[in-house]
Image (tube, rainbow, N blue to C red; front, side):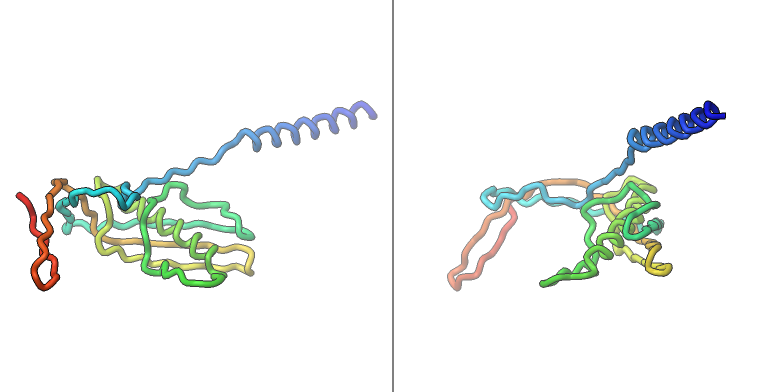
Length: 181
């Protein structure tokens, strides 16, 4: 009887050890894709303006949806692929301590995932006139579910080119910018 108990304890210990190793070796993956960035940070660099044509696909409206679930502030379910570099009109910022910073960050991650899903349906660089619909469901303050749906038109930059500028100062102090062809 004592050996059976020892074997059961050993089996339980082996099971717990196996679970701990499996959890330790498991990994999470997240993917981000950046949109609309400006690579030149230094103000000392003089560049000719880069121009591009924007081609909007007005025939098809894109849409994407994402949902994330949080328990006690920890995300347990949601999309790991998001579009980086997207700003939202609700990101007004402000001064002082903002108690909604965490909620805004969680909502922005869900919005970014929805935007990624919408843009991934084709070869697009950005959404034109995106409309975001977000909702938050709160269950006893323990579980929160953030949902977002975005719709808009896909657009792509084409025909990149630089155009040199000449600045002419007129007698009354006004500047006139001319394109050099």
